[in-house]
Amino acid sequence: MESRQSEPAESHPPQSHPPESSLPEVVAPFGARVLAEATARVCDVRAVFGDPVGASSPPAPEPDLARILRGPSGLGTAGLRLVPREEPAPPAEAPGEGPGEAPPAAAEGTPIPGLYHHPVPDPDPVRVEEVSRRIKSWAIDEVSLYPDDWEEEFDGFSVGRYMVACHPDAPTVDHLMIATRLMVAENAVDDCYCEDHGGSPDGLGERLLLAHTALDPLYTTQEYQPQWARSLHADAPRRAYRSAMEYFVQAGSASQADRFRHDMARLHMGYLAEAAWAKEDRVPEVWEYLAMRQFNNFRPCPTITDTVGGYELPADLHAQPAMQRVIALAGNATTIVNDLYSYTKELASPGRHLNLPVVIADREGLSERDAYLKSVEVHNDLMREFETAAAELTAALPVPSAQRFLRGVATWVDGNHYWHRTNTYRYSLPDFW
Ligand SMILES: CC(C)=CCC/C(C)=C(\C)COP(=O)(O)OP(=O)(O)O
Ligand SMILES: [Mg+2]
Image 1 (cartoon, rainbow, N blue to C red):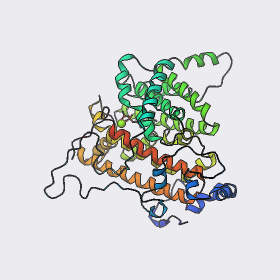
Image 2: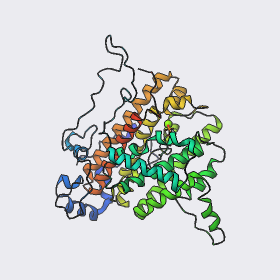
Image 3: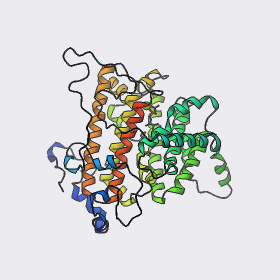
Image 4: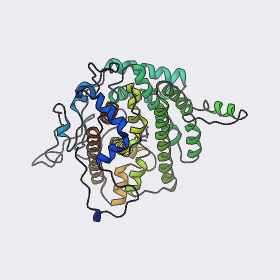
């Protein structure tokens, strides 16, 4: 097990956080129990990657075996791959900079030139159709999510295709619906409380706090409890959060629900920071923006990959700093993908909508194009940091649930890019190439 190269101490000022652990330290807190269990159960690589032929545990759901067997990727992971992984051919030169080369137009649905990503197979159309049917029924019949004139936008979000692409290892459509309801509810809160369906920075803290109690219940006296309970039906975001969380709690464990509540509190804190800057009409420093975007972030979506997959990453493994770092890096990469694909949509929206290219252009005095291209490089660096950290942890932690979780997070990252790239109803690329 290679240890992470420690960096020369003199190059770093005293850190306010513990220095990054070397890998043996990462594993040590797991304790002999976990490693003994892992060693005893790891009989062959296929068992580790979710194809437990002959293993004692119940047959795993039909995984995306090709992708799982491709194993981790990124720098330094060649030795960890089980089968060669097709790599997207990196552009020989920046688009349009080859000799006599005309800048290629970024046609609809094409990936952002130069963006490091992994193509995914088209999601199963049968599942896409069934999830799309069920989520519309839930939105209309169970939570009265939207008025009729929002139906086209709801359909254009293509949430069925999104979730099937991000969770190919979900054992059933019921499992997929757990993620799909939450995705729709999370976007309803963002649209209605923060963004273009009545959102505003004014009073956002109150709205988010009260909506959060639909996920993390109020425990109070008998006198006041009924008023709170009624409040959860007062608007569409709260109805959606309450219902989606009820299904999640029924399907998952107490620690998975607690993990999700924590991730949603992070999300809501990110919304509040973004709103504070909007209210002050302030453009943050780039690092401040990246900090906010680590919280206003897709994180609550990939971190439920085990619940949607019908298994559980133990709480003590989820809580480890090395796992937390992998999750944060994955969330950061996925969310900068949104900044890049939603850039033209946000430029066209009222006021100044902050995203990474806008903040870099303002704070670093770059042209819109140069700031956008630099944001692509920031994304690529985050993706490689994520993949390197995930590969190291995969190698250091031979626990099937942890390895499947890490694969699931990587699959979510790839599915999220697929959805952003192909959702030409919602997104279009700038003409920078
Ligand atoms: C689904 C979920 C947990 C979302 C979290 C935060 C969020 C809404 C995003 C990361 C998407 O960002 P944004 O508000 O920019 O959305 P669009 O660009 O309008 O799609
Ligand atoms: Mg966006």
